Amino acid sequence: MADHGYDAGRLNLPFVGISTFGKRPYEPNWRALDADVAVMGAPFDAGTQWRAGARFGPRGVREASTLFSFGHAGAYDHEDDVTYLPGDVNIVDIGDADIVHTDTDASHANIEAGVRAILDAGALPVVIGGDHSINIPCIRAFDGQGDIHILQIDAHLDFVDVRHGVRHGHGNPMRRAAEKDYVTGLTQVGIRNVSSTAREGYEDARAMGSDIISVRQAREMGTRAVLAHVPTGARLYVTIDIDAFCPSIAPGTGTPSHGGFLYYEVLELLQAAAERHEIVGIDLVEVAPDYDPSGSTSILAAQLLLNFLGFIFHARGQL
Image 1 (cartoon, rainbow, N blue to C red):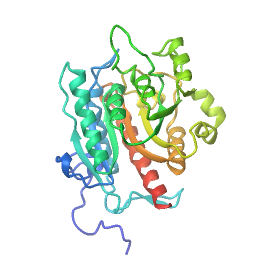
Image 2: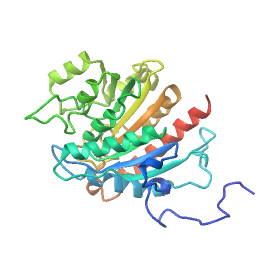
Image 3: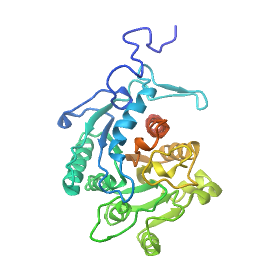
Image 4: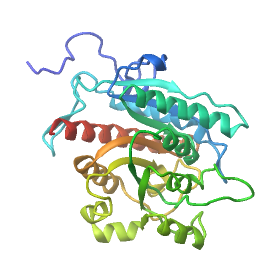
């Protein structure tokens, strides 16, 4: 008899029950977290410059993640001959940070408080946005946590300093991150086409420690060469903007950009990153489900996160 657990208890199909991330337990008490991974929604999209809708990203990704709610005995990958996310990896969903409409500072403070609570509990924070400005409070929460390097997978550089007084919109997060003394550098992958950042932004990024790699450059270089830009031994925070992917497979986003990555290109990069580096935090942003009636963008996001978590904890188990 196979030891998968489906013959005991509830079958718990994806369309049954409440849509927490991966149908994992909900923990509303942020002061009582006891988990390996804590997933938090950050449904804030007031930082967008074009199409809104990423405020519904956490709901969309959570619902899509129920498709992969293989909680009985993990997920077996026949190519790797590995069962990822077995039952001893404890993942909880802590709900959403409270969002105060029209108040970026208050909303960002609530997101930061959630990430700090996760870090204080010794868990890996996984934050689902929301627009990319939610990365700003996520990175703030790492103050006092030691040095980190940021791997950004994105169509846009997001390195604007200030425009008309705006410093905390979705075009600013990598600039704000680079200003932190505990952020030792950035590897920005997938950047392409007409960008949200002017030439001086690129010059500033390079001067402040960024390596900038386009989709075409990444394809020519290969995964190993891309990751060679990340310093050996660096503790890695990974921020994934869904518009890094080609809109042919991820149309549900506010700022789509043609010529993006395909699924396995990013998956293999994340797998290699998990094998080579300690992953200390993750955010995935800019999923706007209403622009994709098929739901494939949300499914892509959920599948990517669950696979990445599987890679991370498998790599930790090999240490």
